[in-house]
Every structure is written in C-alpha cells, then in structure tokens.
Image (cartoon, rainbow, N blue to C red; front, top):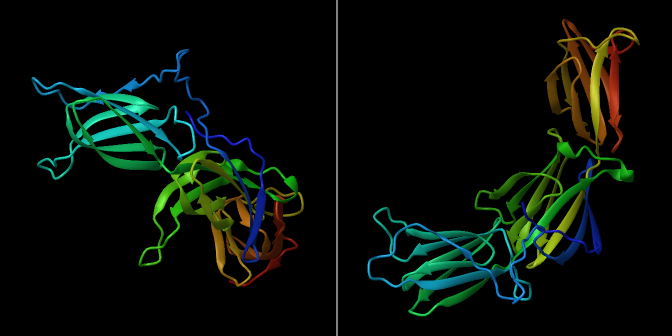
Length: 323
C-alpha cells in the first residue's frame, strides 16, 4: 500500500485546551508529498510508461480509437503522481437510468486509454482527494495533465512527559470544517489509525481524536496544503484506570459488580458491570461508585495525565452509601 511520508522537521507548535480535562498539541510539519512505494515509471530513455485501462464497452465497428494519455500532479509545482491513482472516464450522454455511462477505468499513476473521438468526463481520485475535468477528444492523441490541488494529513498522538501511549486505543475521525444548517459536519473518514497518511483535497478539516471510548476527546481544525503532508500530534491528558472491589486488602475482585464513574458535576461518565473494568479517562476528579448485591460503596479519585492506575475499593474500609 502506498502513501505519503514526511522527513522534514516539525516547524511550529500550537497548544489548545479543551475544558479542564484535556489539551491538544498540534505539531504542524509540511514537506513535499511523495509516494512511498512508487515503482519506477521511467526507463533509461526517460519515456513515461503509461498503464493500460480497462474498457467498459466495445469500440463501435468502423471507429478508430485515439490515445488519451492521463497523468496527475498534487500541485502545480510537484512531480507527477507515480502510483495510487484511480481514473474513471464517463461518456457525456446520460443513459436511461439518468447516469453518465462509465466507459473506462484505470489504476496506477500515468495511464493510457483508447477512446473513440467525442466528449468525455474524466475523474481522477487519489485517496480521498479527487478532481474532474471535461475533455473533447479529436482524431489526434491527447495528453491531459490534471492538478489535484491535494495533500496529505498524518495524525498521531502523545502523552505528557514522553509516556508511551496505548496507540491501539487511539482513533481519529475527519470531518468537513463547515457545519450544515443544523449545526452538523459531514463525516469524511472515521476510525483513522494513528500514523496513517490520508490523502485529501487541500483545505481545512475538523479532526476529532478519541483516546479510549469514554471522555478523552480532542477536537481541532487542521489545514491541508496542496502538494504537502501535514503532520498533527494530539497530546491527550488522560490515563488508563482499572477498578476492582475487594473484601480485605488481599481479596480477589468481586464478580458481578456494577460500576459507575461520575464527573465533577455528578454526571455519569461511564457505567459497566464487571469484576475488573478497565477504561481510559481524561485527567481530573471523579467519584467511583461500586454496587455489589445490596451494598453500595463510594470513593473519590483523581486521574493524572499519562499515569495508569488501579483503583481498589475495599468493602471493609470504603465509604458505604445508602441506596
């Protein structure tokens, strides 16, 4: 699988705070967007190798096909995209279903498509980035170069003090920056793994970072520049915490315990029934309530950023509350 990589150093940093529980550290570095695993596209003579297309119909009898050569650039001043492109060519007359007919597809970088003279709509896709142009093909071969005005966005996360992060618990979702008339944003790509580079049209995007599935959530608007890869690091001020209800200091966790985690305003943050629940919480103060059979116990805790912990509630010493 191919993608972008960025070897340029980080050039700027921006710290934002989301309430009192979390902070965002965006390290924006831009470098020329390149294709990591692109196969060589030129021979010793420097002639471009154009990949063939898959035709979605037959050439009419008597028609003489003409070469349409297609290639793409991320920006005006960047090199040709060498791989990862998906090309689709549509006819210009709608069919009975009201849609334009798909006449050819091709994958790779630069491609060669043989078509009869006429009008066509060419769509070039590079990941989530894309561009469309209308062409008229005459009796002579035509070379069309499309500028995608696209770049890459690479997202990752960190914890304070260089504490290792549980990256399998970190996910990103990318949305359009603008809200619609009801105040919602269009989701472009959910559940993006950390370290993955997503190809996008140039512009500003709204990124949501979730560490775990409870309340460690950061939001930020990030701009993607054409022909560049933007790298953003999210600093989550959160930690993993495990709970167990025991009878005596050396007792085993009691099964079938119902747990509730309450925030500073007594709102319920998380609930789970387990002997040993584990979750990631944003740093801050919480009240933990454990219910086992007809007994309910309470304990106040503080979560420090990056400091994973095990919280034990001892039935012999913990505060017991009335139901």
